Image (cartoon, rainbow, N blue to C red; front, side):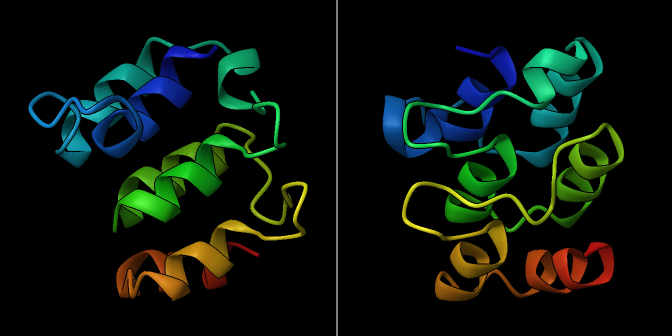
Length: 102
């Protein structure tokens, strides 16, 4: 698993409510990640961006991940994109960033 994917999903999936709840913490992890971690997909084909959109309204982090090569239009096994999850969870700033990017 990618450290970056873990950072994006840790709040709900891992129960770690302390470290990764801030966008700045995620961006710090991103700075230390290689391209393969940014482009990592889990067994359901969820990307870092999809998981981040599901859990957080982090527009700057979304822009940074996209800039590093994460596909803004990537779909998971169910055909959902980061935009689907951001919209469903009312992450308005992330929705706006995703729309600008792709």
